[in-house]
Length: 324
Image 1: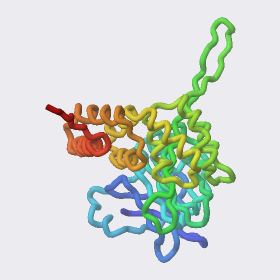
Image 2: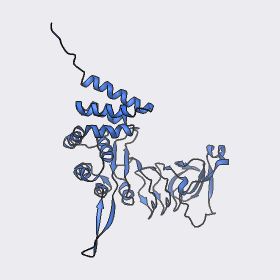
Image 3: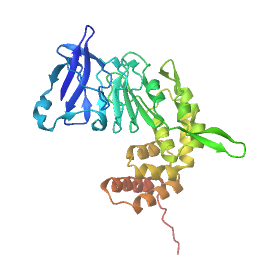
């Protein structure tokens, strides 16, 4: 990758990136100085003109793939990983990045320019590394986006997530009441409610869990299932009451939940159902039949094998006893 940058008293500002891979991972240090800022329009293809007063840094892989090099901006950007040193991103930095799906950063990122995520309709995953506490810029990012976003939180030195939170989509629709000649706004999805689960930029897990009744009324099975297993498998500050609420939903909707997990290949969540004793005989039978009906891929066959083993283990067929 080739990076255009500037030097300042505080550190390095990233101006532009060039490379062959749309998965961008920025270095923490350039020329012995920390990378602390990404400039306005750095990953946007809507920039009026390119800047000339820049320095250039080239990584080793950039030299290897120089012939395939392109400007990493707009639709060419698929994911961006900011270093732990980064503190600020400029305005409209991702303007028009319609294929941007994942953004990774630390809680040291505190300043976000206006319009930073304009047009980022595919962004669906935020990975946040907590280094200094529990506060982050996640609520600001969520406030700019209407689609479902999964936020994954990591504690220092741990490769496994501390929390996995689903923030459902939400949108507004103008509905006309023709006889009364008025328009009123109709809200869809529970996403707006879930985006209010922060206090002083810090996650309020209790408030998040309390909103499940709203999600049940407005969101689909897939969203609810991912939300539930995100909390059960990575139970940051999960109360016993909330845990039982989520488990009760899975027990009640076991077949439907398992069908979604089968379709999306989420074997770890199916194993979590077994670990927690959430299967009923009826739901497990239905899940096995559903998996068997479409067991064409290796992933699907693996799920079917697991479900059949669980079926024999949890609900074995009792042999009849005959007397002469």
